[in-house]
Length: 108
Ligand SMILES: [Zn+2]
Image (cartoon, rainbow, N blue to C red; front, side, top):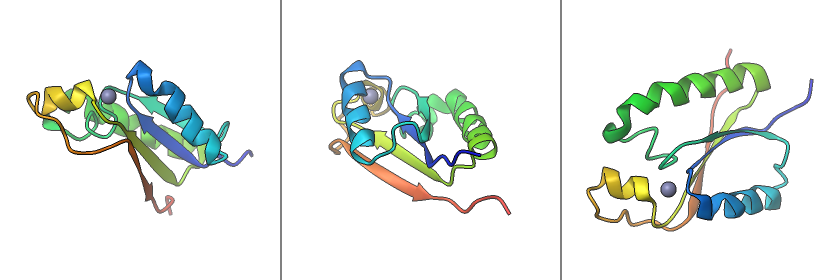
């Protein structure tokens, strides 16, 4: 079976699709990740404002762990995120384009 590396969680913002792809290509991850794209990326799957979305993300993440044997979640948020503004009532979150890699233990 082919070895996949991670699920990538990123925002729906069209301005960042090329940047996300470019970043993943620079990390030699093209063809090695499953993708979950939702408004706000990490904010969309954690902030109480978007509570209805959370279980969909976790169910998909769980499916990718089982199907693709991934052991990482790569979260890519970005500057000037509309979902962050919705969640934070128009105040900006103070972060730049960044990524966070969480290394999970595989299922026993
Ligand atoms: Zn966004």
